[in-house]
Length: 322
Image (cartoon, rainbow, N blue to C red; front, side, top):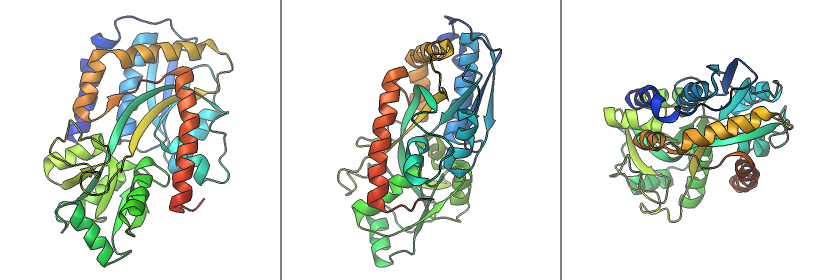
């Protein structure tokens, strides 16, 4: 996929720009970043970027391992039960703060068992359709859905992700009924959208843009309140008639509960430097994402607030617990 490949290439170009000042090394020789989703999605690409530059800054080897399943909770459980020495990290999406509202028996406590390091990136979602979808714009899609309630469906990367709840919020605010089809990650959902197996999908811009550029899918709207710089001709849902609609995805880096381990402080400092580098911001902007601005304690407070926010959305949307 062209845009995701571009983000991977950006990793190679940014080495000198973000890793020139090496931070103190960790007491481990290798960092493994667990991505709880399949390879090929936005979370996976961001993890490979972060792995490269954390390795360069801290003087350690790094690798990325995909552990998909259960809306991210399988990989998250692995990290929660790993040593809190910086050797195993978790890079995940908004699912992490939504799962507590969706899953009755998570095998970990989202707030107690992790130490939040940094928000890596933020991005609006986009509402996309198959290239031959009969609606030319959002108003026509809404009209179709109202004429045949429950006949249309939308895909997402899994139950409880921000793209799933973007769809639920869209249903609520537009007054329509469309069926949700969850997948085990963004990449397989996008493949089915391109193949015409599902008609509609919400997903983040880095996953959406390659298909839009290739003409294999169409983007009807973005979920931010202002248009995305990478898709300037695509309207927002707000300006398309769903007034006040806003929903974004963010991606966070965590370690197992640190309990004062100095590795946590070193990782927070290293991530702050990487995310503050102008080259990071420039390359992320091309892909439709922005570098995160919250690290350490500020990120931990944000996690707490997001858990409260999304629990309300889940409740109002009547999303069933699993």
